[in-house]
Image (cartoon, rainbow, N blue to C red):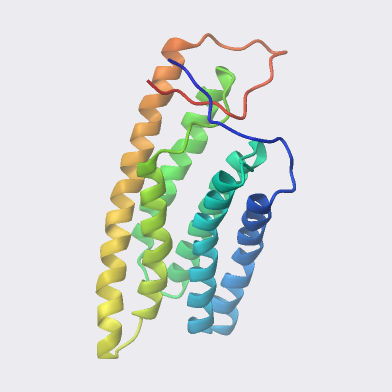
Length: 210
């Protein structure tokens, strides 16, 4: 059975979408705090707040029936940019190694360069967000504030560093598992759907389940 990712409205201005826009606007603020000013505690506060909006906007969208087509694209885009900015900022500061940046960015490059073009040929733009992908994003969103808090010589910072890296490594593994799962779903789309014509518009609610 083939179904689309459910949505309730085609409105652009909804409370969940506003929160996603705030998350996007918070990215340069976080980088300014982390790199230009090196206000680490304020940077951590920004990370925690912006990470919390990822859960809140999804909750509000479901509770108040404000799931939208734009939100299905905007929410994961905000997550990706948020994680990318955090990775680059922490790597520039020398808090995380560049191999961690490469590990996570290469997964998104694979999705953008291979998976999305294949989906568009079948008239789809996105796949449904799976709980595995959400869990991976959750781990990463909360790993890096703890890694940042643990970037110091104090004994209490060691605990944050250990817990943060545990979340980061676990999240990176789940992130790649989710990516491989999405790739498998894309192959299923290629088998089950014919290519769209040039005049056909791709669906922003694409998904394959069952």
